[in-house]
Image (cartoon, rainbow, N blue to C red; front, top):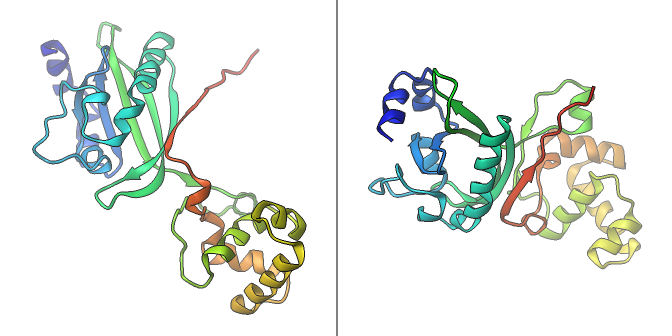
Length: 234
């Protein structure tokens, strides 16, 4: 641990990590934390007086500790493969404890002698880019688990979510256990609220006002999703 601490003093990213609003941290080869920035502490709502360094994920006072076994497995995969590992964490994060998705990545951490000393991890709120955003060259948005306004009711927001996935009224009705005529009636009410008269106009309205980045919380389950990084074959 002493050797690692000495190495960190000259680690070029430490200054960036210290001043970043994104999550940064470093673990040793035994998955013990040896450095975390303020954003990481806020991210997991860890009390200021709690000492993180030297602890493992299962020892942190946070519900995410239940995923410690999987996180340790990914630490070891990162170390053994020498490749980046990507994770999506969805839980009640931040001091305000809101359900929200974060994109996290881990990289192997090497000494000057090319010896792997552990892993560096980085995390930020997960961006989202829809097909229209891609086509129109619009900057990606952050996924939202709270609606951008109270224009629509909770049930109408579910319809919005499915409409933006290009599902028909009949398909939406099956998912929400309603008749397609009921869904169509709801859509007419929602058109009036949005001051539009057609489905294409409604989709544009939703995109303009941020509803295209909203996901109803009941469609999101707290957990950790490990994303396999595939290497291109020659």
